[in-house]
Image 1 (cartoon, rainbow, N blue to C red):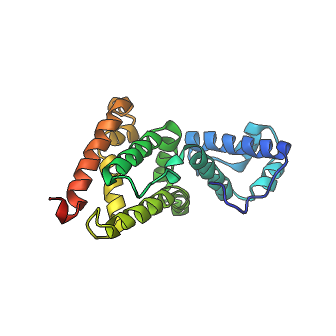
Image 2 (image 1 turned 180 degrees about the vertical axis):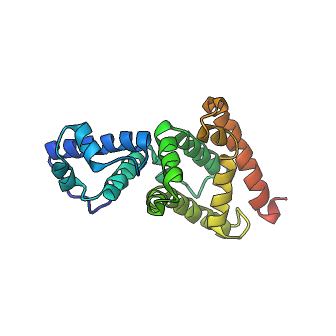
Image 3 (image 1 turned 135 degrees about the vertical axis):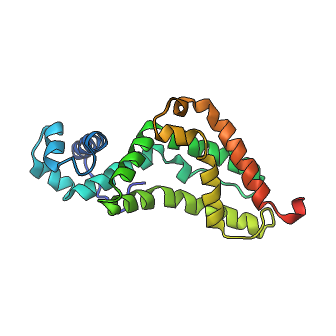
Length: 212
C-alpha cells in the first residue's frame, strides 16, 4: 500500500531505505515515537543523519513509511475478495477470520499500541495510521455491504455503521486479551469462535425482515 508518488529506487537505494524503515520500526516500538530520534535511527543502520534525511526529511514521514510497510505486509484484508454472488454470512466469516488473524499478528498489535500510546501527544500519528490502514479496509467492506443492502440480502441502513459494528464484534473476545498481552490473548484457536459469534450476532441484527 505504498503511495503511488513514492519514487522508484535502484536496488542499493531501496535496500538502504528498507534498512532505515526496519530500524525505525524497531526503535519506535521499543522507545515510542517521542523517545526515538532520527540520530538514533541513523546510528542503528550505520550511517549519517544526513543520509537518512535524503530518504525521509522528517520523523513523521519515516513513521508513515513504517505504517505503510506493515500495512503492505499484513494488510491483505484491505484487498480480500468480497464477491457479491456469495451469501452474506460466508463472505463475512472469511473476511472476519482474515481480519482477526492479521490484527493479532505481533507487528500490527505493536503498531496499534504505539499509536494509542502516542495519540494524545501526537494525534497526527493516529490519523496517519487510520487513513493508511483501517479506513481503507472498512471502506471496501462498506461498499460491499451497501450493495448487499440494495440487493435485499441485508436490511437497509448505514453501510459504514454496519461494518463498524461487525469489526467491533470480531474484536470483542480474544483481541481484547491480545491487546493487553494477557495469556488468553495467545489462544489464537479462539479466532474462529469469535468470528462465528460475530457473524451470527451481526446477521441477526442486519438480516432483512423477509429472512424471518
